[in-house]
Length: 493
Image (cartoon, rainbow, N blue to C red):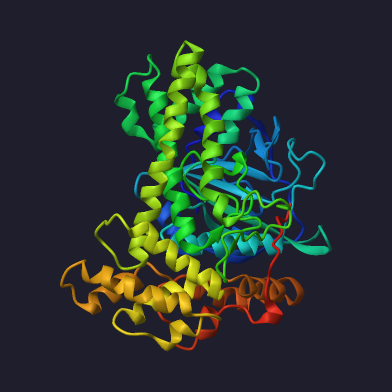
């Protein structure tokens, strides 16, 4: 069933990981399987056996050719450095080459206590597994680079967090699990050769265009820093355009490949508020919505620190090169964010006042406590004249009423394009359906409390087509009623 494993990471020196076999669970049951992703990865699905798959995706049976391991990494967690984190509940089975020739990691999350668990049980509750499955797949459908969910299995065992919960194992697919924290682990130990090995692996795997650059003078590694910064700028701009709040942007959750990784206490905003925080552990608001672009830059600065010995033999020169690269993140992010927001407003050309136009709408949304997702979706109904459904989203709509004429004048300067074409273009980037907190929590509660995965399956189907109106599923597009508002999300570790 599994495609052939290639085992690139397992062939690194053993200080990069610790060998670890998944800990078996008592009663594995396959509750979700991403068949299109499996096909894209090259799985042989003829005669697919659900019970056999449950054994593999729970870790009870190791697929032929896999060499399970727990990766070593460090990380700044809420600004505080921990020199030894590592996979505390995850196991990398190995890598496969998908049907497009791309290398992909296959990892089990919740596979039991590893040497990096630091006294924890290494398991995952069902709720966070369902959340990561739903949100990561929704992000993929929305065009956001992300790790993906291949399968989810219930374990038949209880996991103890705030209360006892059913246990589960998630199979995650990633371009790689190289993180800023992976580099920090070895930089903290002054292991320059290990940092060089990781940098060469990242270049070969994610940025092969840099292979033509000579490594001797450090230009290849400076190019790596610039390339990672560019991907992070584009990634966070996409988050901001969707009202997505990651919730735990620690350096060990900052992917060198530029993917969204670790869907712990994440959430999508409903009422627009730039200071919005959902994570129960982010008590100071470090990872609030508005802070995400600058936290990404801070994480990149930590990445740059690990690369200093590779950038130049002279410390002062290396620091200068790294500093300039990090400074270039700001205009790069600004350009990415404006491109995202222009598209959401139906604009294709660039004008000097576009930032002010976007900010004026966001200010009107904040004053009116308007739903982020539906405001942008319903703007397409107001291209020519005021749309009641748009105004209904605002508790106070004076700001919106003043803004709409400015926007329409800006649209007119785009040219003589037909209104219908503008509407189509806007609806192609502004989703109608997102993983709203209360809908996700309903699906989790039904599964965890009643073993009912019907709401999960329905939500999974809805989120597979987030841009297309789905008659009969209007409830899934609406904000939470006051009695179901979810203001705190939890990590599950």
